[in-house]
Amino acid sequence: MAALSAAALSGATTISTASRAQAAGRAAGDGGTHVPAVVIGTGYGAAVAALRLGEAGVETLMLEMGQQWDKPGSDGKVFTGMLKPDERSSWFKKRTEAPLGSFLWLDVVNRDITPYAGVLDRVNYDQMSVYVGRGVGGGSLVNGGMAVTPKRSYFEEVLPQVDAAEMYDRYFPRANSTLRVNHIDTKWFEDTEWYKFARVSRDQAGKAGLGTTFVPNVYDWDHMRREATGEAPKSALAGEVIYGNNHGKMSLDKTYLATALGTGKVTIRTLHKVKSVRTQKDGSYVLTVEETDAYGKTLAVKEISCTYLFLGAGSLGSTELLLRARETGALPDLSSEIGKGWGPNGNIMTARANHMWNPTGAKQSSIPALGIDDWNNPTAPVFAEIAPMPAGLETWVSLYLAITKNPERGTFVYDAASDRADLRWTRDQNAPGVAAAKSLFDRVNKANGTIYRYDLFGTRLKAFADDFCYHPLGGAVLGKATDLYGRVAGAKNLYVTDGSLIPGSIGVNPFVTITALAERNVERVIQQDIKTK
Image 1 (tube, rainbow, N blue to C red):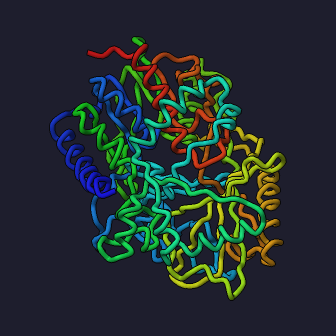
Image 2 (image 1 turned 135 degrees about the horizontal axis):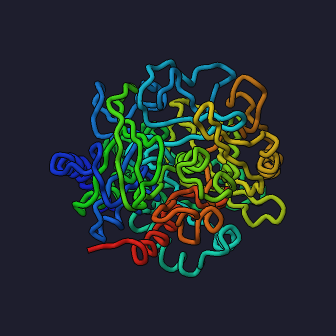
Image 3 (image 1 turned 45 degrees about the vertical axis):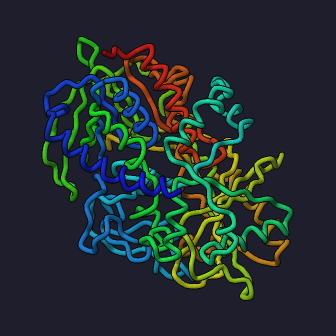
């Protein structure tokens, strides 16, 4: 554990130093310049692609629309906290849009802010909103770090065309190792005041005949233990998570991306948004890229060309780029499957009100450690994170993010008037997920004599939040919009390497699966497609 902490500090330095050195030493990616490989995005799949390309000796440029989060604000911290968020919290919003919209029906959660290139975005569609991370490291900056490998039987059901033995023997272990996944000390968990909320939910689940499981994480548990004793600066124990963690978390900028930059072959350019993609006569790709400052002012519009193009902009970003290219005629031969197979991984949030004699604790770690595992339920499978609610005071609330097996899928379509991919998804399509979550938590409430909280998800009487998700998946599904290794159908040397490949559901927090699948795919692509020295 101590070595992990040292590696975290080392990684944080590496990415900052290496990126500045490379930006000064090479002009790769400046307007009009050709680079061998471009990776769009810096999230999980993108980070895998960049690292393995760099190791293979391929000059690679990563284009990230968000910031590199390495410069402290006026308070001396890189990231803002959850209880008093400022402009660093949100991506060009006038007001924060936290998942909990109210408390006791009062609008005390969100705050007015200055529009700025903050770290968390809530992308709002007609009847579904999606949370995504913005910055070098993508979603790894803003998630709870729960590093869950899916049940093999469900992986085989979702992706039957992928060799599961190969994934579980080789690529999942590789992903977990490189992500620096680690496990909580269970004795410390049982003793610490910071996880009373999780122990209360575990005991209540047990009374309903439900089992729980410890969940590995990319947060450094040893660092958290030292936070509790005052030996390390607080982050998880200071309520930091959805707007970034200042300490302790092994986000991608400290793992895959730091190592990628260390190859000397990878460059990251921030606040660079890819607007469109087209091809030239020689088959290379030309990207139109807008560079802005952190307040949204356009600094330049440039064109960058490349031979190999990897899309790692996430389910929303990669799908939109492909749809725009197909529908505008820039890449007219792309598959009609682009935009299909989208799902929210069955995400449903809910909360329960505990009895006054059963408090959950005023002090709560922001990093989840346990999940209720009822995935083997034959009629309503659910894996439910026991989520914290670190309000700094006693709330008697048990909060959960339920991951359900919802077979419903949405479709992205390109709207030329807005130049945007719109999501076709109705609230009715959430019904299977809500029913599954309700089935589980009705059992917990009945066994414990408790009720739902109706005051947390807006001003209405609402027990289940089904209008947003954290785990967007699909849009360029493996084996349909692409071949079995992420090669985009109808285009040469164009690859998808993110959650767009997974058809809407994986049953657990998806980033380990996205990472492992990218490891598998990129390995094959480099072997067969990429000319390396």
